[in-house]
Image 1 (cartoon, one colour):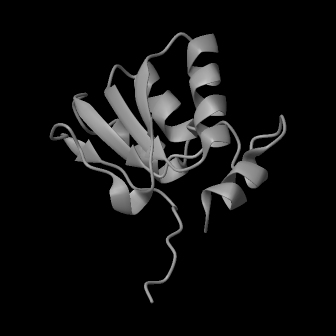
Image 2 (spheres, helix red, strand yellow):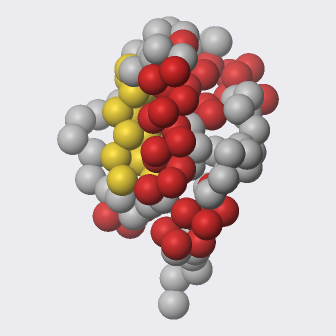
Length: 112
């Protein structure tokens, strides 16, 4: 799925997947000591923002400019900090290591 697809999907004021974190992420993250965490293909940022409130050093990336913008605006409103890169999944190059990588319902194109 292309960045244009996701930009179109995230357009508007509604939150496609809501603003509450994924239930599995919310249940599991409380069992781990906060450190650095990466959210690949994070979209509108619901999980990253939740985890940032818990004191984690949050890193995220996605290919959607609209999703990234909505996420960063909401993070600013909620006074949490996260690092959010705009990049394709296959192009992401981490600049450091992470204590946790938390992929959550992201969609990849089939390889041809």
